[in-house]
Every structure is written in structure tokens, then in C-alpha cells.
Image (cartoon, rainbow, N blue to C red; front, side):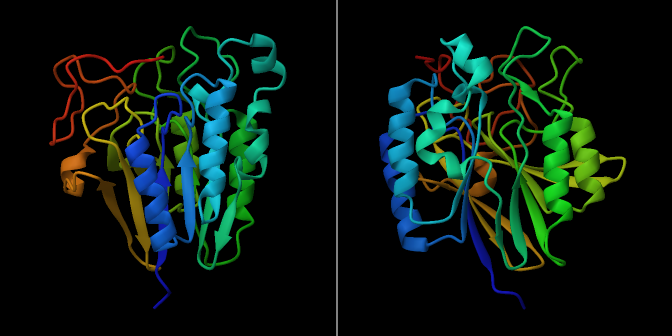
Length: 285
């Protein structure tokens, strides 16, 4: 029996509108439990302001575990278009070695897949886009893993098309899932929608498990702030949604992927059983 690996999956921390109590608790849990790896699947900041990145950098660099960081749509410059197009990751300089970092431990690897774009041929640039180059780099990394090593792929946006080509949640997500299914990835870890989920997505080449983490910010959707604790024993991947209110995992998870992180406002939108839907949309400052 392989030694069980412990992984913490955090997302959508949104410094600038962070939940201070939640991040203090997470840092304490990391210090006490010593996870083998920590995956942060994007949206470290609220508006990619320098002061937000400074706070995120201090907190992430203080974590006592190997960390990899994905870039979220909120982490690209909003107010400086020159920087957005020509130096979009400049404000990550204090943690540049952690950005899209591959982490490999015996039997298990975290492999990043970038889903953010500086610009897109559609109005809403906050949605996901899997470029040919990003997918190629991810697949090449998976193919080069040591024999017997299972891959967990980290992304910001869930790899779901959801909608028409112009409104799709993640353009190119279906093709990416097909390619990941061919390689038998263990799961795809994502954020963006601020509620946790654990679903199987069917592809032409078999199912792919998609695991989403909630938020550690004040911008809640239908569940309190949370993160995912994953255990891999070499055969089974167990997911536990951790939160300060000790709500059961299944009560914290939605059954489908919404198009964005806004609280449900229309009938049929995914809502977790705990149903903590705020009366108004979350702040965006």
C-alpha cells in the first residue's frame, strides 16, 4: 500500500476582499497538518492591484508547504492595458517561482494548465480560454512524468463549455478534457465559481473527474468560505470540503458547474444543499 498523500486545494482567495478569519485558519491547518502539496487555483486578488498582490505574496510565501499557483482572471491587470498585454504577470514577481509550478512527489504530480487570456474574441474576458500552446505544455508535462505517477491537473476555470461558443465558460475545455481523458488523469482541480463540486464529466475517451474548490473570500455564492482537503492512497482520491462551520462535505458541494461566481438568481441554477445564498450579489471592489 502506497503512503497516503495529503493535498490542500485552495482557490479564489481574493485579497482585497479576503476573509481574514478563513485565511488565518487555513495557514494554521497547513502548519499543523503539513500537506505534501498545496494547489491554489487562481484569483489571488480582487482587482490585481499592487497592494493586493503584496498581501497575497506575503501570505502565500508564509505557507509551510510546497505550493503551486495558477493565474485567475482577477489576477490580470484591469486598469493598465499596456501591462495586461505586454507584462501580465509582472505583479507575481514576489512568488514567480510558484506560478504554474509543477510539483511531483512519489506516485502523484500537480501539473498546471493555464486557462486565462489577456484578450479574447468575445466581450467577457473573465471566462476561460485553453490555448493550443497551454494545452501542449500541459500534455507534454504529463507524458514526461515518471512511470506510475498519476496527474492532478490544476486550472482556474472549470473545463466546461457551458453555453454557445460566444458564451462558453471555458473555450477549448471540451478538447482539453478529451486529451486529459486519454492520459487517465486522476482529476482536474479548479476554482472560479466559488462553490465546491466533485463531478464526473463524460468525454469521447472516458470520464474525467472535475473537482472544484470554494472561495476564501467574502464573495460567497451559496456556501461559506472553504477549501478542499484531498487524500490519495494510491488507489482512491478522497475529497473533504473543509469550512469553519463544519458543514458536511456533500452539503457544501453543488451538482453542476454554474457559468460564473455570482449567487443564484434564476430557477435551475446550481445551489449547494446548505443553500447559504446571500440576499444580494457579492461586492466587487
